[in-house]
Length: 437
Image 1 (cartoon, rainbow, N blue to C red):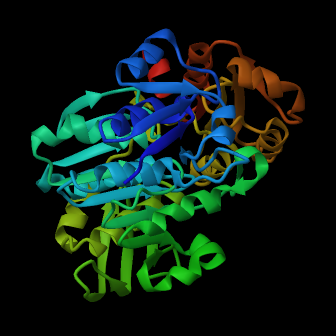
Image 2 (image 1 turned 180 degrees about the horizontal axis):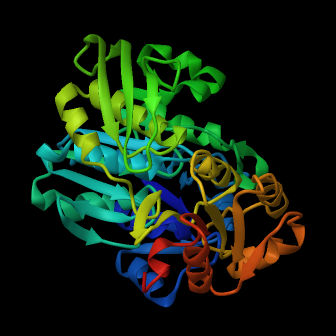
């Protein structure tokens, strides 16, 4: 039994974790390492008998330390926030759990799975909020591990048949099947002392894991006994013959030697139709197919669910305005890799333009201006380029090709609609901040 617990980092779910541990028979302390607690939060902790301390407390006391995987402490950490959530929920979550982590594609995969598992009333936690069925239980929640507890508290009364969770840096160990979508950028965390690939390795605490073939081969091949892989051309689930379309793409799926949670091994072939206008969207669909098969879902359920997936607002979606198509990539996680992937959708489209812009400060990870400028400079001159907002203004002087700048986001879109047929809007922002759309 844990007697004396210190929860580190109140910014990323620490208040919730401290509160939950305070319900157990132990003394709980909290270290607000980033000094972000407001008056209401401090009062909440005090009411729950959680004592605020500083770093000196660690050196003077023998204490069990719970800290985020991205936190760079000089003191040994006994449990990550992810592991703490697993510890707190292990006896209360009574339905299968799927956890989704990775660098890109997490939210899209969650919502593909929502369609595939629609018949069992899935409870969803994603960067878009907490949902069950058609009900939105809470918006504007982060995917920090502690919010898994919040999601379960809100959703369990609606009798979910499965709990599907988007997780930022790994897994809690609660999942029957965990997913690692990709590691397209192995960025630094913990003040440069760790890499994302190390943090996301926590997903392998799951019963089975579905992993993109590239990071599996590079980082995680020692987990081969519990891993199913997916990829465009290689893996337990792979593709043959993709026909891309803006509204719907069709591809053949080959399944070879896939392990299920019931201990079977699957071999099969079938065709899928879904919203997947570029290769990375197909990769997301393959992850969803792989985990669904791992959980024992039928091929017909998978095909129907993906047929019903039409893209995700803020994670590639289409808007039609008379003769104009707007391909929207609006989310706070836009980085150089995301820009490169999005541009691939314009390869076969005529009269096209890219609108690029957005804001700073919407995520902890800022975009690299020089790198994204290089990518934009390499766009074919037949494709127009419009920069907008503060991010567009910041890189304008780095652009060496023809470019227009519109300070106002809406003016940029209106200009593009008058001169182009296909508009790719790459905008770094929280989607809900773009109103009047």
